[in-house]
Image (cartoon, rainbow, N blue to C red; front, side, top):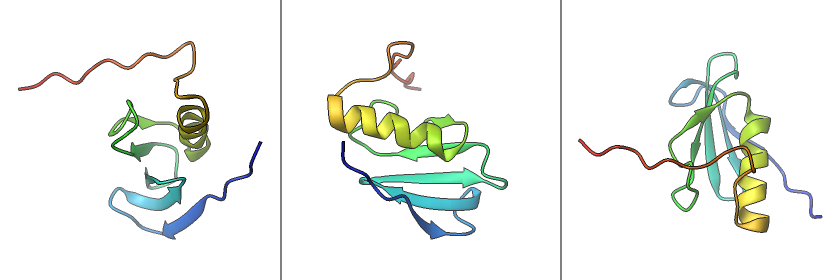
Length: 81
């Protein structure tokens, strides 16, 4: 298994907390870093927010390495207005 680096790109990004780059994904966190958003158009959870950054890096790894989401999770399409 390869090791991938999480790179902090901004200490105060668009959500007010740190922003990161990870394997082609952008991860923006709120102040405190407890709620973070995944931005990765090829990922089925693109635009969704989760807990800490480590939750998102795991989702990115699983998607890029195995092309799937965790068994306990499934993507639900966003409703269109």
